[in-house]
Length: 316
Length: 312
Image (cartoon, rainbow over the protein chains, first blue to last red):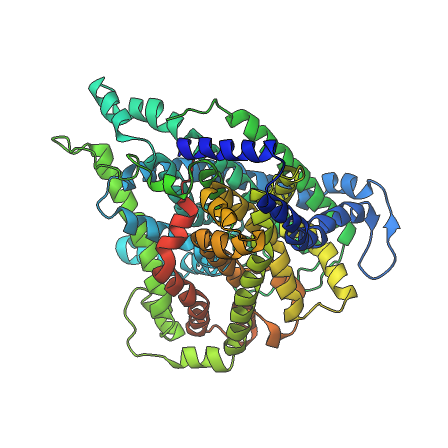
């Protein structure tokens, strides 16, 4: 590989010395026609709307009547809105608490699963929830924890236990957290295992010869050598935790309304203040302000996390 | 949950080591750790945990299937029991009367057309971004990557306004455009990294033989990058199949619903027409089973796509 890379640069340098080859030139002519369609879609449907959301967030607007400039009013109102504060805290709790649980559990599972004979089967089954609609997982998760649901039925048959109110207001968000951990763990097991599998066995043999305990092997071999995978996965979790919507939206039964505001996260808040609910409130400016605020916060967190997790790369 | 999952690492992985690095020389096979004399208690506990997790996932799935052919009282009385009689009418009701037939057609059309269009637009961009040494190539790649961090709830309000101005709200074509466009950043990002990792020699050989760049792209690069293209195609199709937020905002009439909206619709209609969990789970199975089949068929590819040289 190294050799290939070397010869590659050598060729390129030769090209460069004698100007560009005809092939390079013809490839260069493809640059614009090839990149512009994708770039246009990206600009029109992703970047443009993001900028527009920022603009809308400075206005009072219901989508129909003319926009009314209100400056930072939406933002100051947000900070005093207890529903938003709950949504903000919930989003961060999902990020940190569910995130820590996911990473610790995934790491432990990875260490166990990679030594199993049924490794790839186990990994496939753990990964499966990731490709199932979160709506479905949410419905099933809510269904088995209903008052007269599967879990209470089993507890009753086994121990004669009184039904536990899993889904009452106090427990609802905790159940959402646990559900989130359940459906995300398999993905991170898969990612972390791929990183850990790349560590050559002789490091472990060496550590064993030196008398390292299982914990020391984890601390001095596995963690440092899979650190770059873990840090990418952590950033990935940060980004995707902000996008969680379906699992909460469909959670908690059969009403055709939104779930109670106590369990809303950022995405639910935006939806709830704009299109969602039985009588939508269409507060487009307000909802946009909350979305922009969270986007800014998470951008900051991603940058911080990158700094925090940066280590000198270890070549092996 | 989006398909963007994890594949993030693919790029990095593919970026340096090439697609081979996942199973690179010496590192690929993990030799089983030698068994020490007595099993450590921690390990036993760990295995019990792993197998209970696996059992839970399998049981949930079996529960879905069996419940879809049970009557509602049966589901509550004996949740884990086998169905006493087959209530296949759950399926036929869901399919014929609750709009799941139409929703299936809509969803298949959206997922297939959307994932193919995204690929058609993104693969050429990824090719020139990874191969042409243009001073804007680096910044542009980053610019596409930026799109990965922008959640749909930020863009949905402006998009709604935009699409209603051109009459594309409550339109499957409008949703198809949105699905295609919103999956472009991820696809370009992934494929740029993947193509960068592929060796350049073959293309150089084609160039010496006098192939044009266009021909080299079509006849050398696309076949070389086939595994990456297929993986991202599948991941996007899965993501579009399961997509909900844009669906509930942009689709209003029942005949345009996608499968996840049909399930939600069924769920909320139970409030008026009475609990019909058998029917609900039949609908849920219509949403899940195609993904299960795809997973059984191509699961190795999906998982390998995600782990493809993850890490370096």
